Amino acid sequence: MLRPRIIPCLLVKNGGLVKTVRFGSPKYVGDPINTVRIFNEKEVDEIIIADIDATAHNREPNYDMIRNLAAECRMPLCYAGGVKSPNQVERIISLGVEKVGISSGAVQTPALISESAKRVGSQSIVVVMDVKKSGDSDRYEIYTHNGTRQTKIDPIEFARLAETLGSGEILVNSIDRDGEMKGYDLNLIDQVRGAVNLPLSVLGGAGSLKDIEDLICRYGIIGAAAGSLFVFKGKYRAVLINYPGRTEKDALCSNGMSAW
Image (cartoon, rainbow, N blue to C red; front, side):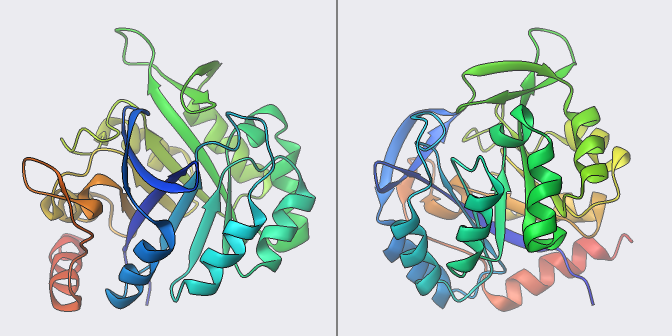
């Protein structure tokens, strides 16, 4: 039976785990390997690890780091960062990673989606869209390179294209909500959910488990991803790796799904 997924998202910069606010002001929060070990014990549904240096510095994915993380993970792992070619996708999958997230590479060369899907299967390809509002309007745009490059690409149209090209999943990341912990951008999610039939995961803004429960109540089967929620605790944002226990997780998923 399909169930909603609750997914920690870890950002790696200079080999360390960081958390950002609106893609800026990275704060060091720990060691990625140790954090993965903690999440193993907490039996998380899935985990996303994004190297935010790779594309910005125009370098290849750090295969040694990926290999080490995959060896530690006892949950499905999605890696993103610096992926520009089907060969890189294939190599990352060979290291024990279940899914590869492609973002700027897919924007620059949409054929990367279809070629990668042919190599490793659509189920392993996640198209990541980093999105923010354009000025004071309600129009959204995709940005790349850690939110520094404007593409003028409509995320709704690009999500449709990604589905046509063979993506297995869409991950929508709200730059405006990143690290704010004030709730997901439901308007953005509504638009993407209405445009595609692919599995959808969303990131940016979760500040409480209630935000996740409300998300599941609204959309049913969805990937509820979060960063700050699972690495900070309390109003002073003390670093504390956390995740709902099995009973708590089952309850919030059941409460959310009861609306369906």
